[in-house]
Length: 169
Image (cartoon, rainbow, N blue to C red; front, side, top):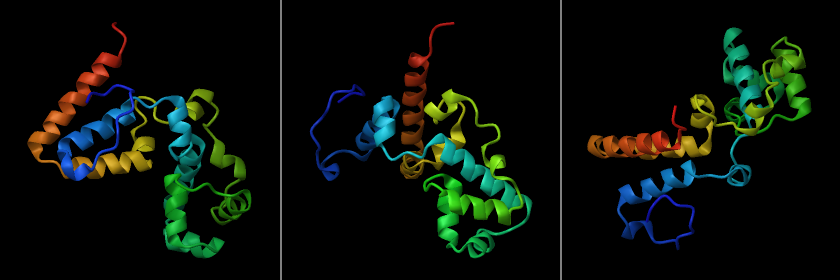
């Protein structure tokens, strides 16, 4: 029961140790292929970027999510999803949001020209994108439920895997 890419039969999580379940989920995430990322319902880097711009501009103008939502005919929960990048903003809503925030549409896409950023939303150092993802939230929620000793063990394992992934200098 390692971190390899082989398929393992699904077992009832009640019958396995919680630590093993978490370890398997961490391994599954760490060894995701590009195809896995495409099919895992992960937010696209562009959606994360646009959502981040909406959030920053809204806060800059000191508007709440509820105020922005009311202005564009949405719920504050939908604005939360837009800002996290978990829901895509339609062209018409993006236009309304831009108008309300008094910015041109192009402003949402400033700084988003690097093709590799679009293709690899979770590249090294992009912790905000990871934590905004469903997998990141799930991993963080599971991690905080561990005892401090188990957290230490998981961190040691992850660091060892990361060190093994890096090319020698």
